[in-house]
Figure 1 (tube, rainbow, N blue to C red):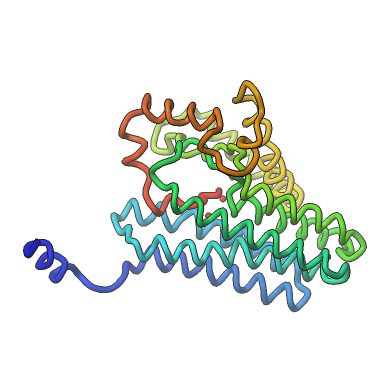
Figure 2: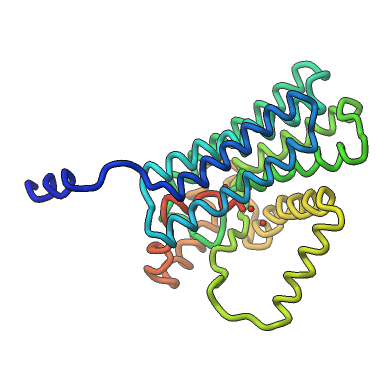
Length: 287
């Protein structure tokens, strides 16, 4: 016990600069999105959310590559995600199309914020326990991508958000509900990013960039919406009989959770070793 105290006493103080610098960049982008939406610049506000996704996708990976993971970094990342992918998208939606429909508008925005908070809290308590191949519920960056992509698309086509306020409210509430659902979503963490690929795969990546560049608002909104819809299909296809536990509530009795535990046992200890507190919502087709 004495040796442990001595080791802690000699442990370097302070925080790691590089990963937390990236997290701060994402936090700044999320805050700027709020300010831009308050000033009526909804296109810039939406773009700032996607920039926050880039920072969110980098900070954890950089921390693992440079061996600079820390409990502080994990908590800081969650706080930044709450602003960038919870509060900011909700305020963007509210300022663009919800603030003229009364209670329904601000309640829809609140449902999204609450969903993001609950989603992040649940994820942080399940690190190292859940099947890393799937997210339980829609990741908060993906939900934010639906809101930001939709508002960006509307702003580019000069659509008055107040004229479709109830549609915006429905989309916002649906995204919030999907975050706290038990639907399974592919996390893409089982993809071998270090492995070799064929030349055609590189060409496909170039083609994806070209498609996104042609109309980024429409393409990004379509991608994140399709990803959100994929969860219910994956869940329904993976169970013999759909139960309430598969949709929402306590998921420990759900059939697919048993399958996930079996899959984790088959995959061995490697998955548990790979999962760290910094494997946050990287959210993300992004945390």
